[in-house]
Image 1 (cartoon, rainbow, N blue to C red):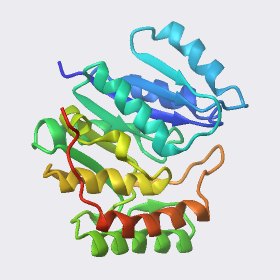
Image 2: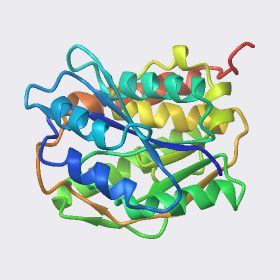
Image 3: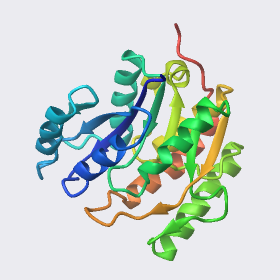
Length: 242
């Protein structure tokens, strides 16, 4: 059986973390979970540690001191997962904006359909977003149009954070050279994957805004993404040296 791990970054997710862990573990296919915990003051880590006693072979956690950013959380998780030789490595939010039941669809897009990166896409089949203010929908949608136009990358949802990578993609990308930390990180990883010649497939999903906890979105995150795309256009993406 393929070894699959879902990386879930957390900061103040006590309302969601146990529910999302149990939802993933209820799926068929033997998914494992790696929580990247950024020093949540609300006790998120304590909940995960309690659940590790129940799921000792499937639930893992890396605790970091302080809120160090989405991008660095995933880079930490990618490196750990590659070292542990997982075949398929997923990104997913803790807040149920990504439906755990869509994980098998992303897995099949890679394992059955031959994609190297499968993206849970809000925009590849119209606009599939629930509970967002219209202003945020428009901003997110046209941000992806902007990225697609500037970078020439045929991906409709360039900022999506619900993904499945084959391990070889993360072994090939030089993760130490990934610069962006917020939602720009998601763009940079897709562009790196695309630039290195890997096959990308978008899988339509319905994105539902979080019901519990607090959003981590900020204007600074969008600013980083806007200017970072310009810098990405100028860079030559090279594979990691063996």
